[in-house]
Length: 306
Image (tube, rainbow, N blue to C red):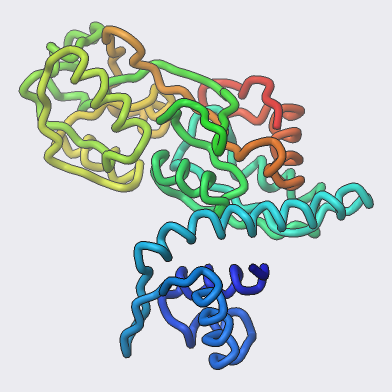
């Protein structure tokens, strides 16, 4: 099995189109098709279902895709490791993050990284923590800053960065704001909630806390950005349970502590592949994070290692 066959396969799988994949790879469409046919002959199974408009993966193709992406990521890491030994950090740093992640000033960290390593191309992607974990596991991201959603595995490890309690945000004229006391999930029963999509870290923490308390809640307004959530609360359309540092983004809103049984804190982590598959660029970013103590709104990140 040749690496170029895997590269061609991954490109077609990602683009779902032979012509677009060929243009991206700078190869002829006939050459790309021949490469895919050679791979299918070697594996003795079709990898794509071809139509006039697009191509989709077969079951065998889906099984191969994750492994192919991991192999290519490890090959890229090997090339970059050799360059790093020679004193030059090159290649690409692919970073994923949730929005407004606690404990890391992402923009400041990337600016410092670029100053130190100008030959490394930086790519940034925002998504929910569950999806980011999948992207790091598959080798599509070098690392990600996210909320802990699973235990470490042989394909994915985590480095703790910071943790903080959850806070209830509401309109200053809301009935909850008058008392100003700490609240429990039971105190919030029957309220209308604004929240993120279920894959986001803050939503996962809140869902877990309310389930543990046996309290059902109604998420009537679901958003995919922090400022949209704050705008809806500011119009008194609902309340939200969010990590504590969100309160600094809209100080006109009322902020009340949440008391919940069990582990109801928001823990920020760095998601990384196994040490042998961690790219030199990812190692350099983590070393910079540890050295600079790059801080979020509620304080500095802890010491971390790649």
